[in-house]
Length: 315
Image (cartoon, rainbow, N blue to C red):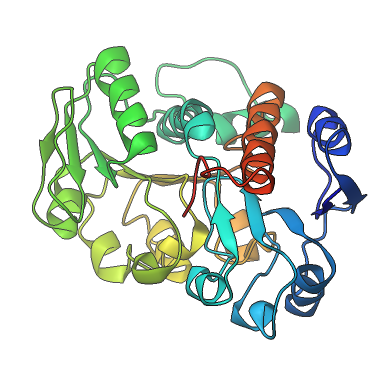
């Protein structure tokens, strides 16, 4: 029986299914593996089921790993050095399809919350300072009919676009590095800054890491309109966080809705102090059924590897 390390606390269904097939070591913790711990895991186990925060950097693959596969619980994999894994002969998989709708739903939660100042309004009610309805109370930005600009038109970007167009009657623009045809009314824009300047609401849905690090830089943020709202459900490293904070502080843009941060779980105090920012604790896929489906997909990749069959979601 192959040995399997589950690096973090996972849904019970995932752990039970894993124990029915493998000799499982289960780290019931919220703390990710450090690079030395990741290296040791690859030396000690045949397979590893990991997730965001487990630091499988290049140094983790030094020597000759015993592990033959890292099954990532999640679609994003910028915490794994794919080149180093390939060089060491370690397969890497992720869980793309099952996270699409849940992540798109969180994007819409942030769009609505940031535009309609929902976080600020809830804080007002909880503080006991609300004085009752008035015609000019907390006027935000209307969402229906506004132009949305989506950065990255992969599975999640398209799911967001469908919600915006069919649910809220929003014209959809998008920026994608390559030409991308989609099955809905939407127009591809040639440059990122042109998209940032044209849209009332910007939603970022690109993978983290690599060439996307600080893709949304100060120049891109400066291109936004003063009434525009910025939403990020991708990865924190995609955005120049300091430039975004500066723009929000100066009210160069109207607001932001964020589910991810540059140095999670650290969130800058300057960002937390902003009334025009809605901040969520990386809730993108935080629904039990979705997390169970992610666990099943990750585990199925390990089972396929163990059986010598093609992997379902090889990276």
